[in-house]
Image (tube, helix red, strand yellow):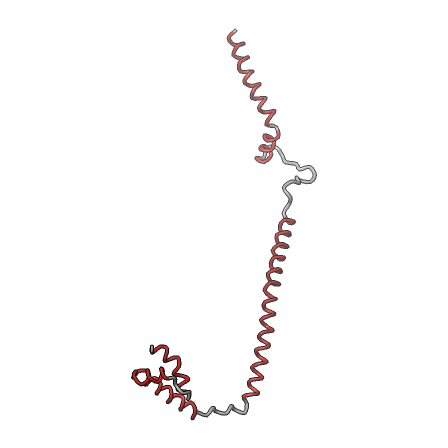
Length: 158
């Protein structure tokens, strides 16, 4: 018989069960398995002699206190679980409110200045605005200037 199959049954034999004929034959022929059985029997004999120590008189009191602490921890973790989504929603609302206030505080791009804005001529801003508003007219003046040049040249040659 195989040693691995015998070792599965050694615990029962060491506990006091009578071994089967095949197991007994193997134990008689195999020194390693017989030694393992002997060691198991010695270990079980030591365990039979061992006495469990008596718990201290305050064991129950400390156990109850520890159980209360664990219950409070589980309640606290539930609150932490609830707190995290609430803080996330609050942060999103604060960001949305901040963006809304920032946009509300900025003047809108579509609305122009209210009322007439007087820009004095001769300043760089006034000149640029004058050129921008009157660009079509000024381009036509350039065309007239070009015509005037050809007329002047023809009249000078005559």
